[in-house]
Length: 327
Ligand code: SF4
Image (tube, rainbow, N blue to C red; front, side, top):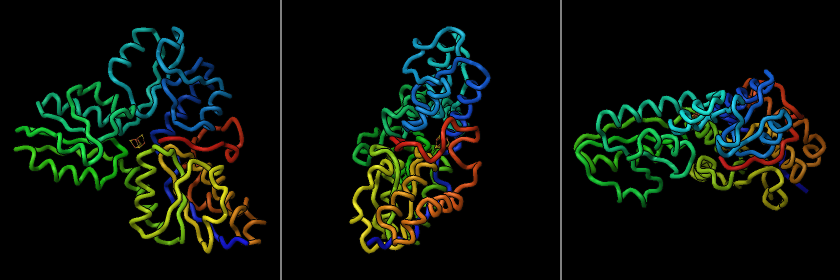
């Protein structure tokens, strides 16, 4: 018999505002009768993508797949400047969903190039946001894990900047490391506040519960970081992609209160489905019987409707979305 009585969802989880706005822009364009595409998946989540498809919004890999005059939505990660130029030159209606924070990052990196700095960019090399930033600073040196850092050259004038979702501790550690690499070091902290708040709220929840369930893509760096933080709080954590991964009630043996958090590409509605699954799988008899009601209450505590995946109407019920993918 299960022992789980309560599941708490960390506050300020769900999509970040950048992803949410890009989704809203795509829906608005389609609702206005435009033939709408997104350049790359607006978020790596099959449920959201199929919902957009139901609204007639297609994901394309290249601009060549978009007909002249049709609308193309640039996702929150942004793109290289030449991609934007090509879209305009091809006569496409460009709807720029680049997150305002990422636009700021792009402006900062252009300034660093103009000022003659050797730029070190902390980020995941092939991540679309990093690829976009490199379009503005082709000579920037991208580093990720600590073992990469030794390869950073020594230069008189260096600058450090970050991909938005990098962990703040890593950025600070790299900044300290780079002091010995340069005579003049300029640090531009572009770690997104959403990332910082999500980590704070995850830590807060982890300290209050017996076990954490972290929901997000297996390869998502920001999701892995949340799992690591739970360990720092001294709370065991299970990382999953979605509620379907929860099949073993044994993982919740002796657990009374469970906490849930999710990466930036995990819709908060998915956390409702995970909550319900935990209660059905490992809840006390009372919690099992009231699984849906308790999951809905946990979601209401965690996010107002304005903080949900999209502020625009859904094509299908929110809680029926399938699992989330990589952030
Ligand atoms: S994580 Fe921050 S910077 Fe990146 S898309 Fe979301 S809100 Fe924008």
